[in-house]
Length: 632
Ligand SMILES: *Cc1c(COP(=O)(O)O)cnc(C)c1O
Image (cartoon, rainbow, N blue to C red):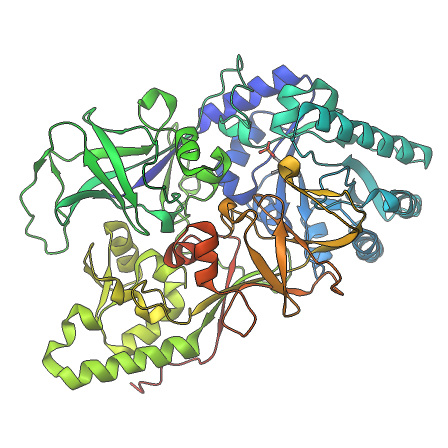
């Protein structure tokens, strides 16, 4: 038995219909970031079958994948790299959110090219206006130019302005109303300039349910589709049903009990003295959560401890409760234990982060039944895109193979000097959690050449390794030194073999008083320049980084300002000369760069869990050498 995420597609279908009925305008279900952890494709198929005319995602690559899987619905994407291969997005017939004149010009020229080619359909764009959120979207001073330029392209048959869009801060109903008024002004200006879009869309789940005046022609529906409320009580009367449940077998871990999911799988670390309600097991017994480690959830029975099953003959089998019990880690309300909302409250975050961060390494099981194999999405091994097209912003986990191989060689030399005792844990390498997010596929040849023993800490990881024809010992409580090869031994932290980088996708000058991101937690005290970095809590940056963390751009530290969103953060570039496409180093090893250790301090997520929980939209990039140098 291994941990599993159950996804109730019928609940998603019902939530979709319930909200559509309640808001009285069409809805665009949002399935970005693997459908908030539920699986983009099964959710998209469900809402398409439920009559959705539109589906939204952040990245072009997410839209391309849905199109390739056979979705026929209109698909909108809005988060683009400055180096996007627009032809690929146009070929997939995606609607494109456009935030700047540069993007518009590039799309216009790609569309012109296409028009002269075989396929003559026009390219649909949605002009994105910043009405106060300070993230993507054109600043008000640029609106007229952007709208007029778009109208010009439209007249020349290059594009069709299918939509005008913006996004709300959700700070308060009054703030949302103010943004709605700004948005209406932008739409009037568009009409004045001769544009006649099919849809004007502003509201996401929160405002759609709370403020009818923000609904315009369509609402974009994210969190409520999955049955969770964007703010407590906001969906009252709709009968929203949470779709997701995470459960896993209860095992022995030394003299404690544990389930094989941890912060490296996306569960948030909990503060000491947390108020998470007890979890419930399959026998109806309650368990308290003691600790969330990178690979385990450590729990204690509140009632009589269960009997311990006799140790099985298989040396790799874990021992667990007798009879076997399964713990519901994140439950639906009917399950009686802790829900995604409870986890969010206990960890000081929001329900969005709880489901969205859950690792793609955890198997998803879809209810009702799986109509086909495709509906059972197990994101291991990760799907590799063979093409060279740039269809999403740059998000890269860079693995330093040189450093890895050097440490491996040193360990092997030490093992050789002790000879026969080489199988000891002191020379073992922990490859749990896809080698702590490094990507086992690329490391395995090096590890095989080294002939050093491999270990994993959970059955899930053991099975994944075996699927790759590799073997390891299952040692759930191995010493942390087995992670030293990555620089991830908390006892002896070294340079991390994995660093994280991205790019600026949008840069804009803003006046004093400009606010940034959800909840308007930050206000510019003087005129400044804001940059948009396409990395959010779905990808790597925990929300707890808020107010503390910084990154480096062009070698200079710049603070993240405002809340961390699912797909992006805003940085205050101040007086720095910066352009879209400029590299952003989140953490790294070069002088002046922020370190993984600092990120761990700022966020409360351990270095190993930060690396292991890096999301599926982040590419692994390998630098250094191609071979291990063991010469076998
Ligand atoms: C994520 C997102 C949504 C969905 O927001 P919810 O609060 O989950 O409904 C809508 N619009 C944009 C632009 C988004 O990025």
